[in-house]
Length: 250
Ligand SMILES: Nc1ncnc2c1ncn2[C@@H]1O[C@H](COP(=O)(O)OP(=O)(O)OP(=O)(O)O)[C@@H](O)[C@H]1O
Ligand SMILES: [Mg+2]
Image (cartoon, rainbow, N blue to C red; front, side):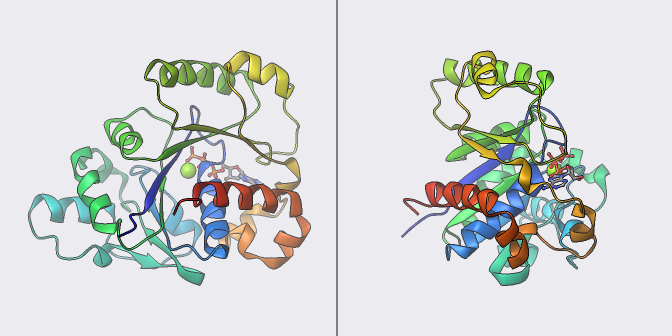
């Protein structure tokens, strides 16, 4: 039986576009007919449910608690369908619950979803917390979403040295040029030299949407909108390329 591939989306700094990337990647995978689950592992500040205008009751904390108390019944109790077949496991509504979640429940949770999906996307924050580190261990690839600025590059230089030290080939670097209008400071060559690593994918600046907040307000993911796919062909192609690389053996 085919098991879901697990992909963690992370960064070295906050606000680089991880959640936006995760959701649009989920759309690209769905358009590729893959069964996709997005787990909001940003337990303290996760906003996927709010961004998708999702009505939900149970969340990551309830799932953790039920597993711990042996009252866990079925994983479907914590998963909510979003449009067009993307499933969501939301973060806790109350950020105070984040610290109560012990990371050790994650492997059990992943084992419960692995036969139901082709891909599981874990949207995280930029901290090297126990939960995120365990997510790394259980991921097939770890996608670092970075911006073109010196603190991102400094952090990535450190992380790529650590991955090399661990002889891990899980890291993929996604340069996100679409979070703001201004273009970055460094050339791709400079970035490569600083990080001592290649950039694997670039989300082009043309994917920047002036009316981004409107999409959020209406619970929409940019690439679900045909108009956006038509107006941002270059960005859509990049997402399609990432989706098909990640789903290759799925
Ligand atoms: N394509 C886009 N067009 C316009 N603005 C964007 C785009 N993508 C991201 N942004 C802006 O960047 C902000 C941060 O994006 P996002 O929430 O995806 O980052 P994040 O890395 O998940 O943040 P956090 O570290 O807080 O979880 C958004 O709130 C939005 O204002
Ligand atoms: Mg986020």
